[in-house]
Image (cartoon, rainbow, N blue to C red; front, side, top):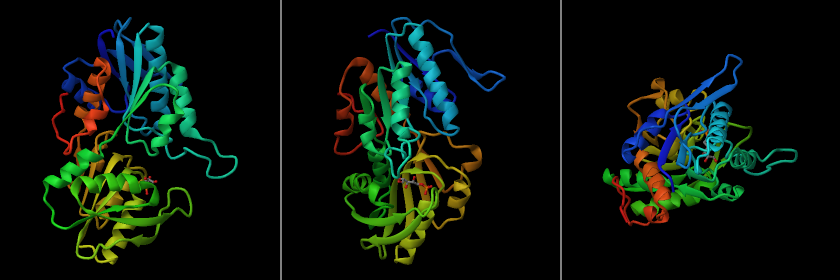
Length: 322
Ligand code: R5P
């Protein structure tokens, strides 16, 4: 492989800079802006011929704009003769549209995969895809990273007595299960219903939360409705307190306000998506995962194993050097 080069769109430059710091490489020079007519404008401002290039861009809000930045950057790098291009997508948008739930609906997550490959990406690195099956939407290699062990370790370090891990819906059970194995806790499962898009209604719960600290584990916080509803039910069922650990802080609509006002004691998220300053609050704790993404990039560049990154019995803040 040629030289390692990292570029970033505008979605989360602090994360890209953190990854570069971890790797000890400078962030590549590229102009990523907008023409007056609103179209995305990109110019790679350094030599990339023969290089092993990684483009870091979570497709967070405004998603369509950030997706176009990613696609156009990949196109520019391909035409500039980069040897290999890896799209590093810490948050993959449209992931909840991964199947037709009703007739005449699109499968937008698959369309995203087609666009990324057609633009010229050779590989993808993603973090906690809403549905792991999205890996199969690509015909190029996908490395699927997870921050769940990092979040579980964080909770473990706090030595909170009697914890029960809660999946806020049936789709999240394996994620919550992975988390609770790491901290050796029981599992409870909530049955959630969506009467309309973006509205969460908690129906029932299986498991015993009485007198215990309930920890909701989820992949993303979008409107915050799921967390608010789940917290109310858990407290009504006798939980001592409720916390949430989620990977992607989308924080759509007035989610931050909702969380601030909710009965949740603490909400821990990662930095796959950049939080606005107005959302920062003592209740919301951000755990950076720059090192995880940096380590995955290093291993991809060197051709070493990524799966061993997740095999340690206890995840650690420092990288596990093979
Ligand atoms: C749903 O399947 C996801 O895992 C999350 O629970 C959901 O996206 C959270 O959305 P919201 O915050 O809008 O309730």
